[in-house]
Image 1 (cartoon, chains in turn red, cyan):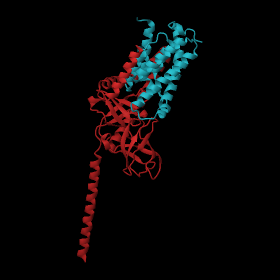
Image 2 (cartoon, chains in turn orange, yellow):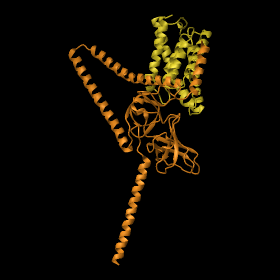
Image 3 (cartoon, each protein chain N blue to C red):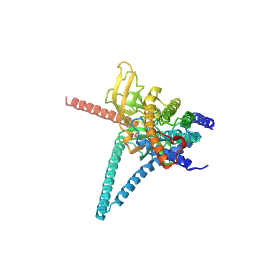
Image 4 (cartoon, each protein chain N blue to C red):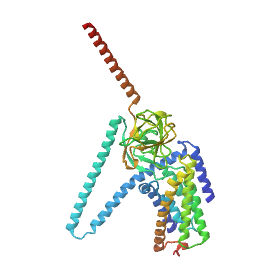
Length: 297
Length: 173
């Protein structure tokens, strides 16, 4: 029996490794991971229900009726205060996301985080929007301050998001000031590293990193973070550059699924055209002034 | 045959899976996240070494792989192999002290986490072996072991009080 089960395990691992992401074992696994997210979110409700039940039992054990009434009233008021605080925080978080949507110009729905990875090796979250809501694998996910990851798997009602800090994550980025291209990669120690920079470019602490859109994996022009540490020789690009992500997924409860990012190229072309037109009109004005001055003579 | 002992083991297994999904992500310390499924399998293996089979760890490992998104079969393999080995070693040693089950549990958990981590690296997990050991395997092993020892002592005491303890761990000192 032991040998048979070990062989079955090895066969499963081998097939899993060889088949693609749409293979039968992967598809079967998707069903389970979607279900596990629902269990995870239900767990939060079970936790609060247990707490309420505990409080009710405590109330019931009181002897004096007035004391009980006061306690109940106090409990209700506390609950209301707690709810109000919860709503206030939610409004604050949603306002942050709304601000980010307006500033970055992205379009897409807000999703709630309903689960986090139950595997220490995997840095991912589960959101409550799936393929039924138009979410597709590869879509960029943003927090209130910037990109946090990418949709890796979708089920009908949920999606799994691989965070940027996962060792298997990578995003094509550029340094906003110098426009130098590179790749931000997650690591097992939780840091983001800026690698494969254009030759001769040495970033400085504080440089803002945005997605470049190269390779098509992430939408272009979205903020990722800022350089916090540079350990690199000036003459070569060998060394390490650490980027601090703008958002920590551990603190997030809602995220934006980016359906469409602003057309950065079109915006840049429009800005260039506007600058050209402005230059042209000022040139014409100068010529007009010269003609006028000529007439005076 | 359905016995109260088997029902208790199945209920415990369901509870372990539930805790892994609901509780474990919220009690991680830095990069260390407890693995209640591994802990439970080793608690059963060390408290019931004579009756411990390969089906329970295989099913638990497979559920872990399916539910947490890892390579399907990886945890099933390492948990089945090392928890079964732990149970067989313990039953052959016939040592009734408290020390030996805990030592074998520690070794078993370490090997399970190690082999699982190495499998992930073989699958292209982007990290070096040393880094993987430092940032995942060792912290998770320590977390699992601490929880495992606490839960082992708790469950053996509980089973002893309720009278459902297996004959081979009644003489714990």
